[in-house]
Image (cartoon, rainbow over all chains, first blue to last red; front, side, top):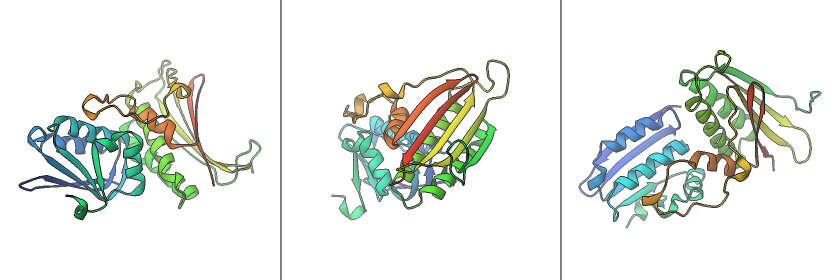
Length: 108
Length: 152
C-alpha cells in the first residue's frame, strides 16, 4: 500500500494528513514533506493519522526529526492514530514529545 | 505437519535484496502475518519487527555477497506445533555476518529528551520489543533471523 500525504497550512498550525503506510520505502516522502513546511518557525504541527495503517521506525524518526527542528515550545500532535501506532510511539519513549489525541476536538 | 515440526500452511519467498523488490518482500510479510494472526493484537508487532529487519538488510549490506553472488532474501513462514502454538517468520540472506546482539539490547523505554534523542538504535529496539522472541544465527553463508510470536 502506498502513502498519501496532504498538507494544509493554517494561520496557527500545519496539518499533515497521512493515508496508507509509512514504511522504509515511503518514509522519505514524509521526510521531504516535513522539510518543506518551515519547521523552525512552526509552533504546532498536527499529524492526522486516522487513515494511517502502519508506521515504521523510519516514520518515527521522521517525527523525531520534525520535533527537533521545531521550536522548543512547539507542539507536535498525533491525531487519530490507531491503538497500535499510538502504542508504538509511547513504547519508544516519544510519548513525552508527541501529544496523542483521538480527534481534533481534544486539542486545547 | 512436516518432519521438521512445521505445521501445514508454510510459505516461502526468495527475491533479490533490493528496494526494487520491497513491495513484494514486505507485502509477503504482511500477508502471512494477516493470514495467521488476523484479529490478534500481535499481528502489528510482528509486521513492525520484520519490516525493520528487511529494511536493515537491504540498506546496510552490499548488493553482492563476499563470493560475488547476488544477495537474496528468503522469507519462510510457518505455524509451529507445540503449546502454545507459535507463528514464525524466518528471514535469511547471504552476506557478511552481522550479529545485532539482540540479547544485549535494552527493553526499557528511552526517556531521553527529544532534543537530545539519537536516531540510531530505534529500529533494533522495536524489533526486540515488538515480538515474543527474536534470534540471530550465522550459518555460512546465511545470516538468519528468526522471529516468532505465541498465538494466545
